[in-house]
Image 1 (cartoon, helix red, strand yellow):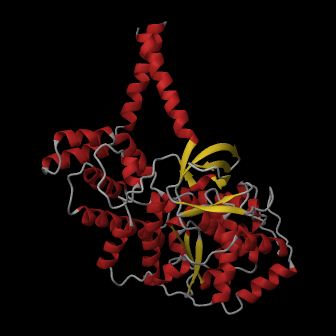
Image 2 (cartoon, one colour; image 1 turned 135 degrees about the horizontal axis):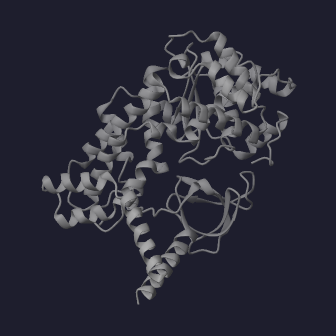
Image 3 (cartoon, rainbow over the protein chains, first blue to last red; image 1 turned 180 degrees about the vertical axis):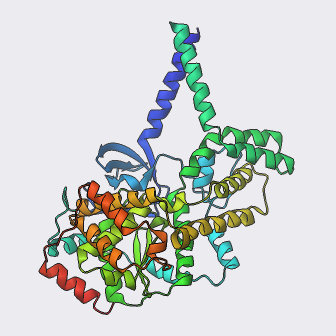
Length: 159
Length: 301
């Protein structure tokens, strides 16, 4: 009897683990869904923070995913995805049953509200340069061109 | 036999439970119950999630890392002004953001970005989430693109390895996570923002203290040097650029100056570690396009 129980628990654990492993969420503000596993490949669409995706295949650092609830399939860099649950109810009260991971990811931690409060207490700090700085975006094609004309050849090809 | 397997599983479960039962749940529930903020059952709910809490100590989410990085950057910029030179800033970003694509974590919450500080100090700072600052003094030490790539790759490696976040004292996160857990239990309507902001401010001070005053541990610096070598190799730059750069620094850094010398191990010791990893100083072949763009972008530095 004990043995049967143990088996059941193990099966449940395994099923749970598989289900978790195949569905991931975007953990960066936004990331391109690409046609091929390369930063240089064409962009199908931008996917945003919290978007759930189902993993279909993995190739080195890249994951081939299907945007959940759609038929759209493409490649995303693995570092843009997480297997922890992201709740988008930022600002709403969460029920006592959610896990701490969910709390951490629900904007309940260091968030825009916390930054605003910190800025109010430290009014000499200047965020304008930061705002400007984070807008400087080098596109993958620009990187590829920069490397090519500079005679730089990445090991394993241009990313 | 069956009994033995069952006993083994039981032990394993017990050990696992011990390992993940963090100090946070104790703090969270004890403080909460004592202050009357939460009930016993809510405290139990917090205890149940202790495993996840303990884990998130080491594992701040990219979004939170981004807000920490912004404020660390703002503190750095309160001590230094920005060198307003679009041409040079664009060039450093072209090189830096290209290198970052070859880091272990190329996707931060809003991407890597680079800014030049208007200072003669020989210095560079990497704030979490990819806000990287380099002084004009440091740029002047670089005699070609490969050497500049080496400096930027070292800073990118600090970000990618999350060294900034690891500088935050555990106690800050304990209090932040306790606040979050108590709030999550639905009983902490007011005051949590103030608590979180305090923990946030203290976390920022922990990081800026290390970046600007105390320096990272020797282990983190050598990890960043070896990480830089990986990035340079993957991207196609000669990692010898790093050894060349450190040799120049060894000649120029003045002991006791409030710059790179005070926050980093001696260039000599870093060079010998790199030598052990098979990377030697060498004169790099010159490339007409690379030399031209490097000189043109940084001519006013």
